[in-house]
Image (cartoon, rainbow, N blue to C red; front, side):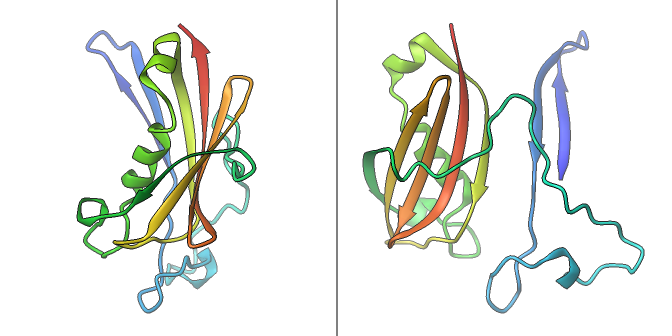
Length: 155
């Protein structure tokens, strides 16, 4: 887990950022449990889930509205030959319209990357609104591969 803050030259906080990373198995690209990762015996692991203040945890939006479909192509693929995480986030952001974001702004978001996708896969992007929270899920071949929560506020 990483946390950092970008500040202006005057020391004013501009943005707080957190990221969570996982280790994938070299043979099958499946997420490894911390206990399965070859680490020093004295390494400390936390089993608690971190929360980002004020931003709701991502939950499935598959019960929401189907916004659009998208076919992953070469530009979405990373060096490991699967869809790059930023491609999922770009699709989630495209669940918003320009007109909508003229009235509200995104003040934070949290993502869960659930499974991998590959070039040629067809993604279905779903959205569900709940007050100032917007939930987005991406479904590929009947499996939810990504979910995200956005927190909005009026401009």
